[in-house]
Each structure stands twice: as structure tokens, then as C-alpha cells.
Image 1 (cartoon, helix red, strand yellow):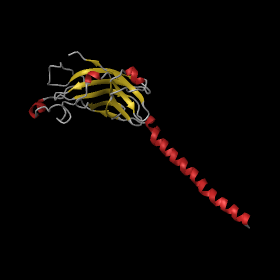
Image 2: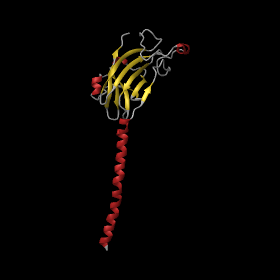
Image 3: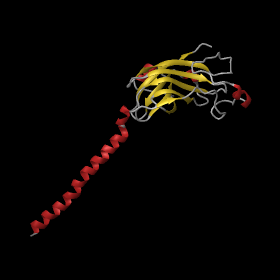
Image 4: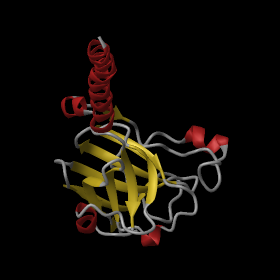
Length: 204
């Protein structure tokens, strides 16, 4: 009789353990899906933003007077004006993307707006979607970034709005643009570069 009771007790102890295994497996699978988000390898998000004429005073140096901003027409995305002209946005620097961990192409432009603010504009961007992908300005070259390093003093602008199309990112006021050498599309979760573009100054 005691042997039967002990055997029955062992069976009862094994049941919770057997139930724990599938629960743990489901938890691990759910975490892996959250971490890697594999479905993004088969999805795309297209963004098509116009080049802004100006930003509110809180985002830039000083706001354009209302009468002046209302009289301005929206310039084309390729418009570039001499640095002495404050009537329309003009390019400070630009460059073309090269691929990192994922095929990436398109153009990066640092654009000064009439109100003194600066935006990074990505045009004809084509890259992959991924988990926690962000846009950075880096003091390193594109070649350095492609080695999966952002270097010191990189400036995070925002999450990547979409892996395709045209989009704008506000550069924080006070950013030392003289230190910036490249734009990097970076997966923050896994510390890898999707693509990067060296920025060359545009003659005024």
C-alpha cells in the first residue's frame, strides 16, 4: 500500500512539470516573435511627404512671419537656393545611400528652411522594414557605419517612418552640423546598419 501511494504522489508531481514545458515554449516563441518581427520581411510602408516650407518656432530658430509664409509657394523637392537667400529652403549637404545589412538606396538631403530650422529629407528611399529601425546623423563615415557602429555623438532623429518613399525628419536645434558626416538607417534593437549615406556639402 505505501508503494502505491508513493507512486501516485510521483505522478501528481510530474503533471505540473509536464504542463510547464509547453507554457515555457509558448512564452519563448512569443518573445522571439516580438524580438525579430519576421513578418516585416514581407511588408512595406510607403511615405510620401512634401518638402516643408518652414516649421513652427518651437522646432527651429525663429518663425517666418505669417504674411511671408502665406505668400510663399511650395518649392519642388529638388529646389536648391544660395545660402544668402532665405525665401525658400536650400540644401546644406546631400549624399546617396549605400547598402548595409539590407539593400538600401535613395538620397539624403540636409535642408535649411526659411525659418532657420534644419530637416533631414530622405528621397526615393528603398530599404527593408525591421524591428526598431531609426534614423541617425553620425560623425562617422558611411563606411564606418556599415561596420555596424554609430560612433560617438550620433544624433537620433526619429523612428524610420517607412521603408519606401520621401520623408522629413527635424534636426534638433543646436545640433553641430559641422561634425555630421553621414546619415544612418539603424536597427537599434540589434545594432546593425540597414544603409548609410555620406553627406557632401553643397556649394552656396
